[in-house]
Length: 180
Image 1 (cartoon, one colour):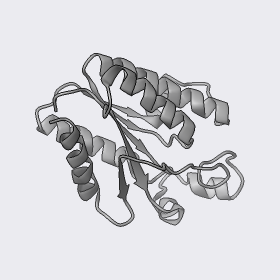
Image 2 (cartoon, rainbow, N blue to C red):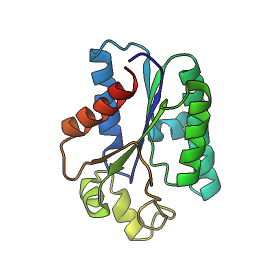
Image 3 (cartoon, rainbow, N blue to C red):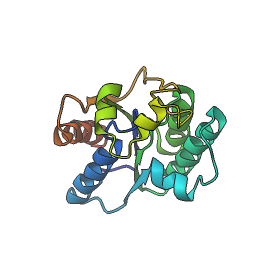
Image 4 (cartoon, helix red, strand yellow):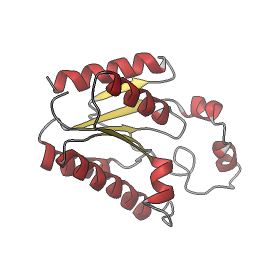
């Protein structure tokens, strides 16, 4: 990889974003890239966005904060891998513009980690979907809050139909094609 970029994994909770991000991280390290960081949505909410709720404004603020960090990392030659639900199209597009402003065209790769809500519910080891379906959690993406599917993702992987290693391989093809 010759230039820094941001690989932005978006999708429903439990779609497989974190799994793919961690596998991508290891794969990029194996390819010899040493300047790569993973920003996981749950971890970011603990440290960078602590205190934010799940209103539309708070969700947008959270995603813009992650985007800003990625913009700085891109500017300094670091590859970022983001695993965040990022449910709203407009703010994802805003982040793309932020990254491409410093990294140029192709420095933001949006990956739609597609997975049906039924499969996400089945995978949910924390029981968050069950709580949301019982009304115990409000504003839960995919249940009581919307997820706006990407209209022009750079790549779509379907984690309900392909293995994580196949998904990662397909993502790496796009990453390597754009960075030759």
